[in-house]
Image (tube, rainbow, N blue to C red; front, side, top):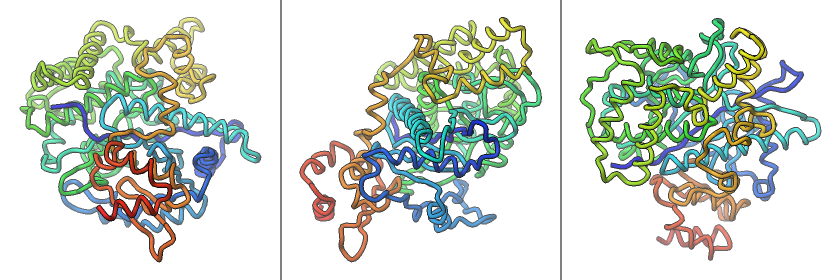
Length: 501
């Protein structure tokens, strides 16, 4: 058993134009993406388009394809033609406009630490894009926030993706992953002032996303959001793999929160794949309990289980951790052991006092800032100044964002250095197919006409385009093809070798 698996995140960023509350978000999002696309390594050659041909977002894991709406890849191409931007980066990531927000999708990686690395590279990418846009004639300042709600009734996503065995019954995922997702917000919530989708009740809660989920299981991602999403679009060999699309997490800035969010999830999914759970942790009313846990920063709320027992979120997570420790054993690999140890440390600290983790997790860090300001200014939770602090915590600008100010003052524990993150903005991970995608875009920018998660399409001057499929995410790595890029000056040389094999 190992925490390692193919995984990635997708973050939609909040966007606003100072002094222009009526600015078109689709236009401004495109301006952000296009501004970053002016980077030298991206602007040379023609810009590769995203290949939608193989995408099937309406296929449901429960065994059918949704027919209430039609998905036409040509419509996405029309969006690009009308100015909505879509850029494939040399680190294997994707930067594009989705639902009127700029979105950054990390390249595929194999472990939680690299998720943190490339997720942070996305933050730096967005910060640079905003800076470039501000210096572009005719655009001006655009502010970006790594958060999940405008506190006026709208929410935008922070999604995770985990490749799993196709042999795992989906019903097992629903049964055993739901209790974990309902309660993991106690260490990966980003914090929010306001209860309800429109924040009509003025008090603090743990999660930005909890109030926006309405059903236990479903295909939707923007309406009637489900705790377990059923989209069945593996972007890989569908006979071997399932891509579990997790839409319930918050957008985290704290590195340890992201690390635990994905690391614990990967361990739990491995246990589900192996049939390690006995079903005793099923929650009677998951949607109601999701919100109740979030609404109680004291962490005292008791969750009612289907068997009649009542546990706090901490106690339920501790039960999962105990089973994970027994399952992983004493010989867990270093990546897995690091997650287990940090998981145990955080749960113990939460049980004592969540504010012990104000230097490690987002919601305690934010609540600590807000409480100090409330006491100093004698403010209630409905004060506009507190709402501004809440939002400013998520500002991607290093000089403005309150999270970034805490980091600059040594008030937040980190897993990474800025140098590592800056390097990850352009360099792909070495041990997944993202290496091949990223290197092709860096090495042969004028000959790559399109790409997707599972293919790269070349135009090398022949009568037709050449598609290189990449259905195995752990192939196309540096170990597999790194040497080829060193000796192939042109894409045609690379393709001659690949097709000959």
